[in-house]
Image (tube, rainbow, N blue to C red; front, side, top):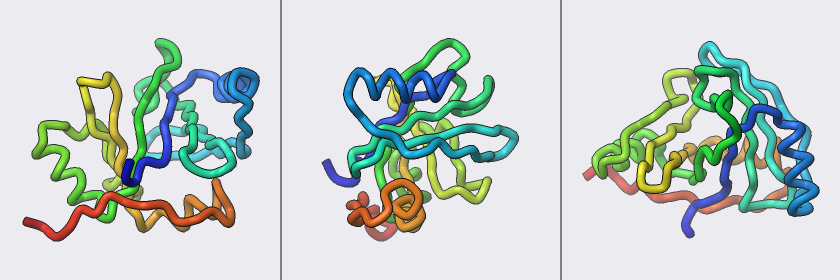
Amino acid sequence: MTAFYHVCFAVPDIERAMRDLQWAAGVEWSAPASDRIGEWDFRIVFTTGGPPFIELIEGPAGSPWDASAGARFDHIGFWSSDVEQGSRRLRDQGLPTDFSGCPHGRPFAYHLVDSIGARVELVDLGRQAAFLAKWNPGGDPMQAIDEGSPG
């Protein structure tokens, strides 16, 4: 599957989710990180060992990662050669933008895919080196969806 590199769960308790997945599946985790986008503080963590990764996000009520009603599958993530062009492509195919980090200086976007009850995330390939440095030091580069040139 081209450019697929992670699945993500929005969770109300990141430590509990890490512990439970470690017990259930033997996965190992990086250290969680705290961050902020827009008005929301959130915590994030990825499994170790290379792709595909499992990502957990703990965000406040009203945020793009609101899990106040309980943990849920949130999205499947793909690298994109051009997140803005990829977002246009998905919108043109009937998959509306649910949230974009681009206005906040973060080159990613979530698109609703009602048929699977989750979102697809496109992350601009320009962020891959920083991702690898933080979450998979020494890891090999990953493929991206080639958005091609505008039609």
